[in-house]
Image (cartoon, rainbow, N blue to C red; front, side, top):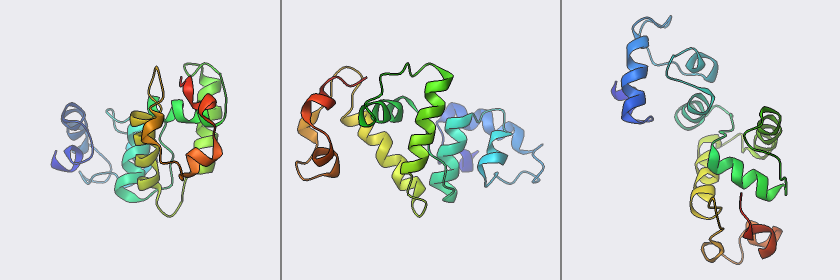
Length: 146
């Protein structure tokens, strides 16, 4: 359970440790996105996060924070609950992904969504004026964060 707990929330760690004994790899924690998806406790987001952060596999994560960032940066007002919108946003996030540091990139993108592109209002005072985000996007575009 410690291998799971290091990367996942405790409840997910409890849920994911049970199937490890039955896992084809003989109880060894699955080292790839596809193998992680086979675990009952591992959905798309969890598998992508673990695969990229723990194993360096180039998989973009797609959580609410990342969805807000993609929507803002692409100026896309699509419904993020729609499977078509999510697939479109996944393709965008995959195109941005740094294949040499996918885990760090995913964590940074999630952090940007959690600290700057907030659900109701962007926290623009947290964006350095010289950052690529500030240079690329004007204040009006970041004001109505989804």
